[in-house]
Image (cartoon, rainbow, N blue to C red; front, side, top):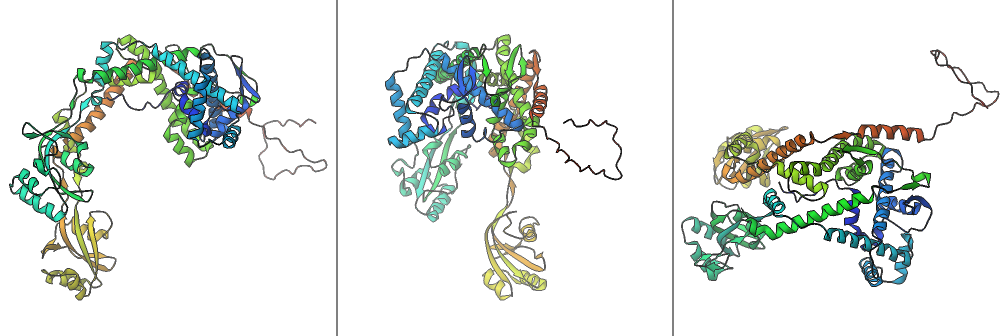
Length: 623
């Protein structure tokens, strides 16, 4: 299982610190704004302003999509949490000395990349983001300090051990492969007719190297060899050595042989594959340098995450502005470690399905779907991530990295011995024949008669000749449908079936005639040439695809089973249902109460007729 895939749930603070340099390069997308303004809360005694918080909301289209209801409450929690993280990181990086010249260089780059080299344009842009020139430079300085501190933490990470390297290599075989290569020759000519002639000669047994030497526009001096000649034979080449269309056709010849004529860049290619060399894993020593780099990165990520976790343990937050009062309860507990709700919201906001949902449904309708379908999965994944370090430790598995990387590693570890047998492949092939079926195709001319008898008579009489002219003379309207694929709707359903499904085509001239098809009172007859019938691809052609598909499925199943088994030994508590229920109650309590209009003096309320008396006592209104 390749662990070099995107990890869908990362903690907000970890993402923040990794991307801090990107933020300062693009002024219009800054999310922190000036520290000047009205204090909304204090983080360890340092003010975070209402303007900073509002800036995050207005400049992020997702976070600005709702300000009320459950999603609005979620977004407020995440916005506040992000600013707490920023304040904590800034304070923790105060020991980093950033030279003024470095800040000035960064500001110059930012101005240039945003086309703000003119002073007025620059000051206007700063003002719109809530900055002065000096406050922006301080923002840049603190951002660079955070980055410098993060690099220092990463630099102190331990070096990879041999056991860590070897396990990473074993769990990521697809990352360390020598790519497939072929030993091949080619003939390249200017016209398809000439390519067809040369292909026919090659299929007839002509010497391919001699054909290339006499006719090819490329590599004719070496008998069409695609790679240089070494020890009397062409050097193997990778697919990138050929134009994309040609490479795809040549590398499909895994048993060797000739391709059909392939068009690319206005030229026509025929390739003879003399030997196919499949992709093969590199040895550990061949891959060692790349493996060391990958594992060292994971060790740095783990060190950075551990540092960040420590920063928030004793953070003190004081809410000053009631509009920014927020709730960030514990949503799950894993081996005594609390998972804050903000991490769930961060996972929701970064989810592509959620972004698509917000475009299709208003926030109040999206919220129940998010609570029911998206958040439970995110909580479970976060719980597995938080459990990963203890699982690795208890099982003595030499995996390293952040929580997300450790979980990915455990999934790969659980599936490390999965293999696909030839019997597995054959059984899948037999059970899924439709998946490997090619679609029938042909070139079709359609003659439409208003009278069925005339259509039948023409079908009986036509033996050869110009179909269009003779059918027209017989009273038909003829349409050239051209290249047609079964089911592509170029033909009416009845005629499509007559051409491709009945098997009753009648030979006529260089093609064949279909049955007469009744189409809403009109009678169609097809003249069919270049017919290629539907067929099932041979196993040899699809075996590699099946093996890859089966291996992925079996590894996913094995990984899931392994993680599920390991989680049974971890003490966990999922509090999502309680958190969501508490949120619903809190929002209902905070909602403005609808007032009952007073009855004007002298106008007694009218009592509706035929009503059922209420059993609930009525409390008189007090004035």
